[in-house]
Image (tube, rainbow, N blue to C red; front, side, top):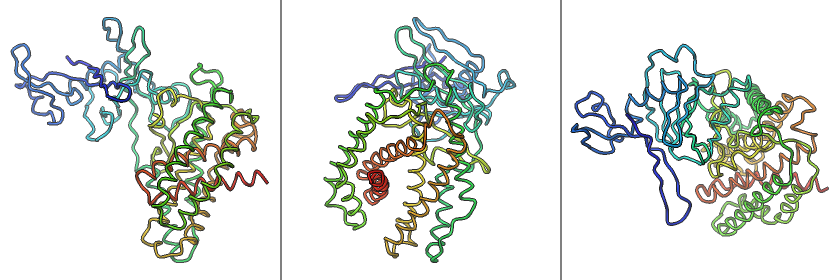
Length: 463
C-alpha cells in the first residue's frame, strides 16, 4: 500500500503551494529495504508490530509497478468524494499492457521525479501541483491523440486527481522514451565553434549542412503548429482571433516588462564598463518613447491572423537531435508564468521568435565569450555575429512560412507577420534582459542587441 500525500506549504509572504509526496512502508526484513537509496528514506517506523522504513514511494519498486499497471489498464481509484484517474494514451504499446516490465528511478536532480519502464517509457511525476491540468499533458496528449505529428515523445498516459468541487489536478504523465544524441543548443554550438574558427582565420564560412539543419527545425516547428491548428477541436484548442482581451493582456505584459527592465538597467548602468554594451543600453533607453508607441499599436491595429495553443517556452534546449531529425520536448510553458497564462493562445510566431532569439544567443555567446575572439576588434566580431544571425533568421523563417503554404488562416499577410514577429522578438529580448542583469551581467549585451535590432526595424517602418 502506498499513499499519495498532498503537502501544503504556507509562507509569510506569497500564496500557499501544494506538493505531491507519495509514501510507502517497507518491512526492514524484506530485500526491498536494502535497495532503497538513503535520500529516499523519510523515517524509521513500526507499523503493525513490524519495524521498517517509511520511504518516498518512487524508490519502492512495488509503487513503480502499481503506477504502470494502473495506467496500462486505465484504472480508477475511488476516494471519499474524489478519484484518481489513470488514462492510457496511444504511445503505450498493446504488447506492454499485461507483460512484465522493468522499472527504475532516473538519478536526476529535478523539480519533478522521473521513472523509466522497460527502457521504453518515461514517466514524470509532478511534485509541485497546480489547481489545473498541467499544460504539458494537455499539449502532448492533444498532439498524440489528434494529429499525425510524430516529432514529440508520444503520449502514453496520465494520472489525474479528479475532485468533485474543484479543478482536475495532474499528478503525472508517461511518454515514449526517445533515443537522442544531445539537445539542439549543443549541436548548434558545434556549428558556431566551426564558424568562430574560420572567422579567426579571416574567413566567413558557414557549412551548407548548417542551413539544412536550420531548415529542418523550421519545418518541424511549422508542422507542430499546423497540428495545433484545429478549427474543429474543443474550446481549449480551437483557434481564436486577436480579440480585445488578448490584445490588452499582450500590451500590459510587454509594457510591464519594459518598465521593470528600464528601471533595472538604469540602476545597473554605472556598472557597465564595456563601451559596446553602454552604447546598446543607451540606444534602448533613448528609444523608450518609440517602443511604447509601437507597443500601443497592439491595441488598435487591424490583425486578422489567428491564435492557437503553442509550446510557449521554445528554444534550442527544448529540441533533441536524434541524428537525422528532431524531437520537441517540454511543453510546460514559461516557468515564471502562471498555469492559466501558459494556456493562453498566441500566434505561433511567438514560438518562432523564441527559437530565433535562441539562435541569436548561440552565435553571440560564442563570438563574445570565446578565447579566440577576445583580442579581436569588438565591432568586427559584432558584424560577423550579425551576419551569421541574419542568414539563419532568413533561412528559418522562409522555410517555416513555406511549410504552412500561403495563404493560411494563422497568418493573414506579410505585414501582420512582420508586425507580430517584432512584438514577440521585443517581448522575448526584454524578458531576457532581466535575467542577464541579475545573473550574468557580462551577457547583458546579447538581449540588448536583440532589443536594438527590433528598434532599428521599427524605425524603418516609421520612414
